[in-house]
Amino acid sequence: MSDTPQAPTALESSHDGTTTVMGGAASVSPMTAVGRAPRQRTSGRERFEIALLSGPAIVVFVAFVIAPVIAAFYYGFYRWKGFGPPTDFIGLHNYKVILTDPEFHRALLHNFEILALSLLIQGPLAILLALLLNRKMRGRSIIRVLVFVPWVVSEVIAGTGLGLMLPVNGAINALLTKMHLFGEVKIEWLGPHMALWTLMAILTWKYLGFAIILLMAGLQNIPDELYEAASIDGASYWQQQRRITLPLLGPTIRIWAFLSIIGALQLFDLPWIVWGEFNLDRNGISTMATYMAHYGPRTGLYGYGNAVAVVLFVISLVVAVLYQRIVLSRDIAGAVTDGRKKR
Amino acid sequence: MTTASLEAPRAKKNRSAQGGSKPKDPWGSPAVYFIALVVIALTLAPVAYIVLGGFRDNSQLTVDPAGFPHPWRASNFTHILASATFWRQFVNSAIAAGATAILVIALGLSASYVLARYRFRGRGLMFGLFAAGLMFPITVAITPLFILLNKLHLTDSLIGVILPQVAFGLPTTIIILVPFLQAIPDEIEEAAAVDGCSRLRFYVKMVLPLSLPGVLTTGILTFVASWNSYLLPLFVLSNTNSFTLPLGVQQFRGVHGSDTAAVLAFTSLSMIPALVFFTAFERRIVGGLQGAVKG
Image 1 (cartoon, rainbow over the protein chains, first blue to last red):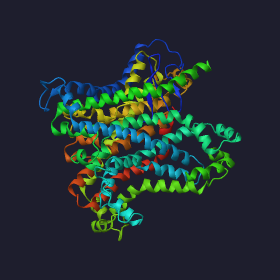
Image 2 (cartoon, rainbow over the protein chains, first blue to last red):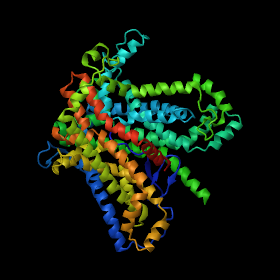
Image 3 (cartoon, chains in turn orange, purple):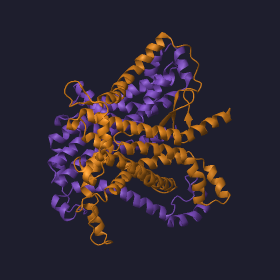
Image 4 (cartoon, rainbow over the protein chains, first blue to last red):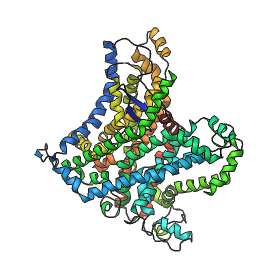
C-alpha cells in the first residue's frame, strides 16, 4: 500500500469466465448472473454510447497501466542508457545479473520478512483492537477517527518525522530516558540490528488503522442474535469471539491479508525516506522497489531498471494468484454452494 | 491477558457488550478505556512530535528532543508561510490532486455506468481488465512509465503526474461505483425512456445525482492519495518549479537539514490539507471503505 489507497476489494474469476468482484464478508456479487432487465441485441446506437462512455477510461488505462507493464518486458532484454531506441539486445543477461546480485537477494528477503511479520504482528493486533473498539463505550467514534489518522498522513511526512525521532540522540530515546525505567536509553533504532523491527513498528503504526476499519466493517455484518444465543447457552465473551467472531470474520481477514501481502511486496516510500537512498542497503531495510528505484532510470540504467520491474511484477503476480487460488478460493466455494442451496 | 479474565464475567452479565444495538452499560470497563488511551497515545505521538517540534527552536530540540515548546515560537511557521516555494508547491499539489480526482470521477463514472447498465459482449473482459489493475499499485510500472512519459515530453509537467494517477485510480473507482449504479432501479430508467429521455440524457440528469455518495467517496480517496503520493512525482518531476509538497518536504530537508525545527514546521504545514479534508469527510471515507468490504 505504498501510494494509493487501494479499495479493500479483491477479484477473481468465476466459473463462467466472467469476472466478479468480491467484497469482504462472504458476499460474492455475481454481476453478470443477476438478472438485469433483458435487453435486445446491442444496437448500433448502443454501441456508440458504450464506446463514447467507456472509451476514454479504457484508452487512459491501457496507455498508462497496461502498455508500460508490457513495455517493461521488452526493454528488459536490452542494455540501454535511455538515448534513442534500445538496440543492444542482451537476452536474459539483465535477469541473470539481478538474480545473482546479493544486494537484490537481501532486498527480496526483506520483502518476505516484512510480508510475514506484517501478517503475524498486524493481524492479531488489528483483530483485538477491532473487537475492543466495537464494544459500546463513550467516545468510540472519536477513537475511530484518531486511529485512522496515520493512514491519512503521507508516507513522506511520517517518514520525515519518524526519521528525526529515531536517531540515537532523538526524541524516542529521550522520552524513554525521561520515563526513568531503564536508565539512560541509547538504542540504535535505525542501526542494522534494530532496523527490521523499527520498520515493522513504523508500518504497524501507519497501516494498523486501515486494518482496524476493515475488520470493524466485517464485525458489523455479524448478526447480534448469534451472540445472544451463545450467551444464553453460557458461552463466555472470549468463547464467543473464538467460536463466532473469528470464523465469521474470516473473509474480511483474508481480504485484509491479501492487501497487506501486496503492500509488503511493493513497499517503497517509508524505508526510502527513513533511511535514505544511499544508506538503505548498508544499514536499513532495502526492498525490491527501492532496489528498482536505485538501479533504474535515475542512475541511467534504463534496460536494467525495467528488468527489475519485470521481476517485481512476476513475483507479485505469482504470489497474488497463489493466494487467490489457495486462500480466497474457500470464500468463493462457500458462496457458490450457498447460491445453489437457495435455488 | 489480565483483560481476558476481567472481561469474561462482565460479558456474561452484559449480553449486548458486543456491538449490539441495546447499550446497557455505555461506559464499559476501565481496562478497555486504558487500552484505548494507550493506542491513541501511540497513534498520535509522531504527529504531535512533528507539530510541537515546529513550535520549538533548534536549541530546544537539541537539549531536550522530547520536550514541549518553551517558549512557543511561531517564527518557523511564519517564515515558511511567507515563502513563495511553499505556496508554489502547495498549489502544484492542489492542482495535481484536484485534476486527478475530477478526471478519475469523469472517466470512472462513465465506464462504471457502461459496466453497470449495458449488456454487451466483452463486458466481462472489460471488467476483468480494470479489476486486474487493483492488484498492481503504481510501483510495478514506474520504470517503464517514466520512459513513456519521457517520450511524450510529459516529464516536468504536472500532466505527467496526473494522467498516470488517473489511470491507476480507475480500478478502485470503478469497483466502488459499479454497485452504486447497479442499485438504481430499472424502473426509473424505463420511466425516463417512456418520457422520451435518451440514455445519455438519463446519465447526465439522473445517474450523476443518484451516485453522488459514491462519487464523493472515491473523489476524496483519490484526492488524498494524490496529495500524499511520492514515488510518481519523484520519478517524473525533475524541475523544482513543478515539485509537489511531498517532494518539497524532501527537498526542504535536504537544503535545511540542520534546521530541524524548520523541517518539522514545513512538514506540519504540508500535512494540514490532507488531515482537514479527511476530518471533514471522515464518515464518507470510512463508510466508503466499509461499503466496499460489505460488497
